[in-house]
Image (cartoon, rainbow over all chains, first blue to last red; front, side, top):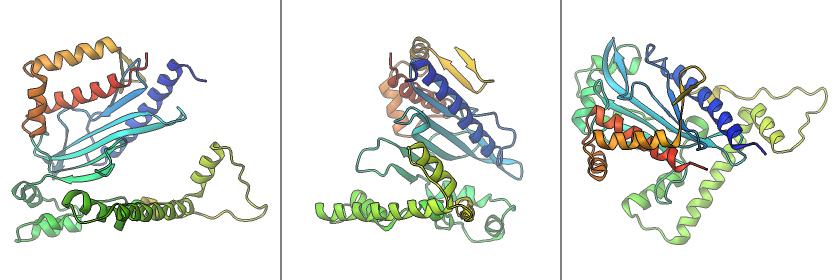
Length: 249
Length: 67
């Protein structure tokens, strides 16, 4: 069994790698931003990874900052004390050059979320003027932004397409229905709730199978880690997987 | 406070984290509940919001203290 200091060292190393990955990704849109910072308390098996500067990372259109990004991840080790697990994450986008007041929108994940709120969710705060002001300043680097920039029409919030997990991790019908029950009090019996959860589980199990076919190497690695012995018939050609499905927006 | 692995991982002691927490509360006027109420109402300016995020982070880390 690993000592507490070994676990902290392992978590520190994984937090470092995690912070580096976030930095690499954010450098795609803010090339000169400082690296993400990970902070830990020595006696805790937890890290928080946060963007730098602490007032948020400015995002520019044609060199002019119009939005600000704030990102935080609360991390610990998984149940086997081996891999980094995310207890919570928050990705918020604000109007302006510093994050203050209310964001336009935020994506959040809370591992131990209360039962009546989805663990992973998107919250849209944007008052119409705030979001349309930002949309009105769209750049010309992409077709959608260029069309908006060149249009005389007042931008509408409905024109924005917020990503929700792509091909494999998208929400299912049951997620939307349970959201309507929780948030609007739509009629639903306790049995109906169970039916929704059954449907969600079926959907996600089916998606797990699909994801395994997309990336069989990862599945083999995880199963081997769990103690399974996996062999492929001699002479057969392993399936190539379908990695582009995991790369698509 | 010790910097590990270049400069992106910072290790604090429990005492340092608690002291920093107290310092943040002092910086925002000494009334933690009032500060949290303003955060809930999205009424913080940029520097206050940064302090609030730091406070939330320290609380998360201190909650995980195992010894």
